[in-house]
Amino acid sequence: MAKNGKVGDNHRNGAVRQRSQTQSGSGHWVKHDANTGRFMDVKSDGKPFKGVRKEK
Picture (cartoon, helix red, strand yellow):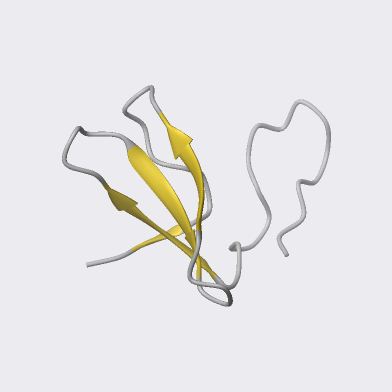
């Protein structure tokens, strides 16, 4: 997993592994776990997750 670094730094050190994200038809970003194949989390503000690679 990625580390978050110093408090208040507002960025992640390294990438989140074994996870990816895709944008749903409604415009929300959905985080997807590569190991289990399950959808983990949905972001409803229209911005993608930080440090998680995007699926094509």
